[in-house]
Amino acid sequence: MPRLVIEGGRCLRGTIGVSGAKNAALPILAACILNAGVCRIERVPRLRDVEVMQDLLVHLGASVVRDGQSMVVDTRGVESWEVPEELMRRMRASNLALGPLLGRFGRARMAYPGGCNIGARPMDLHLKGLQAMGARITERAGYITAEAHRLTGADIHLDLPSVGATENLMMAAVLAWGTTVIRNAAREPEIVDLQNFLNRLGARIRGAGTSVVKIEGVSGLSDATHAVIPDRIEAGTHLVAAAITGGDLTVTGCIPEHLEAVLAKLREAGMEVAVYDDAVRVWAPRKLRAVDLKTMPYPGFPTDMQAPFMALLTLAEGTSVVTETVFENRYKHVPELRRMGADIKLEGQTAIVRGVPRLSGACVEASDLRAGAALVLAGLAAENTTVVENVHFIDRGYEYLEEKYNACGARIKRLTD
Image 1 (spheres, rainbow, N blue to C red):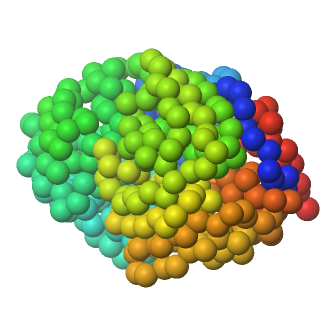
Image 2 (spheres, helix red, strand yellow; image 1 turned 135 degrees about the horizontal axis):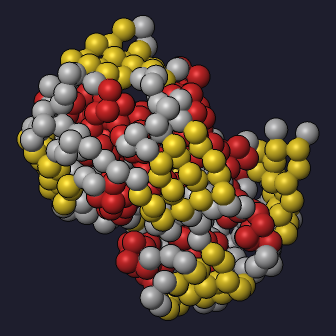
């Protein structure tokens, strides 16, 4: 298995670019199933999760050709409506094929999804919404089967603003009879990007980015080209990398409005922040201050930034209180940070972080994608050498991470047994 060997104690300085958003690319690639034609998706990051989605599309009968940062997806040959367990276990976002398959073929069958073990992410909101649109759902032997001659528009209220459920129901409703209204919808920028792509195909959707999304069903779709938005979590991780190393980084190719919650906490911690049209520069003071934060659905502080930001708080002056409200199993990075000298106490879903003067290099293991990013950041700031195992988790969501950081002064090597 590959590992990252990080020589710590080096400030990051310079300019670093942001790749396309993984969490926007995955539903957009799944949405290509709805159109029996050819779509060109630009700024698609080279990530393990994207590779899994590509394998899923090919399994269903699509042709997928990568051309640099673009993917050309031809779904005219898609005939299968079953997603095997092997693909579902490799990535949770494989469940985003459920809505498009049901919308196009009137049936879909798939195993329950896998992915990072960060807490319960049940499918019930997806299935209840599809049932409200007329789908017949059966669950047997670990598989979900959904059937409907043609879905019918419905008024759906989500118990929680689930991103995946919002996306799946949006896609399922595109070819349904009548109008579908999704209330208490998730508001993430990636949902807005999905709406923009679907509307380019010929869908009629409005309201993404608000709590109410309305979809008027159409009889057919056409080909389109679309560029994926920048990855706000990757951008936020780079900003924290500048802060934790006492550096000075300009993160380019981002959308600063998507980073407002993270920028607010960086300013509160004492970072200097300059915002431009499509870039953010941050540079560090001599000492960072402790801050409290609570993860919330967008536009609140993102749960995906909790672990990277906690790595920063381990070196901040004072005591920080971190509360995780989105996923109940998202503190697996805490024992690994403690191994590096961090002072963190867990009380249920709250972490009390007392800043220490320094972290020490150690051999640590990534348990999930964002926990892995947190350990890389801690390793950049720590004394001596840090070895991060289970790098495959990091590769699921960060494109060329070590190359980008090495270009800004880091010393990271990837070793493979």
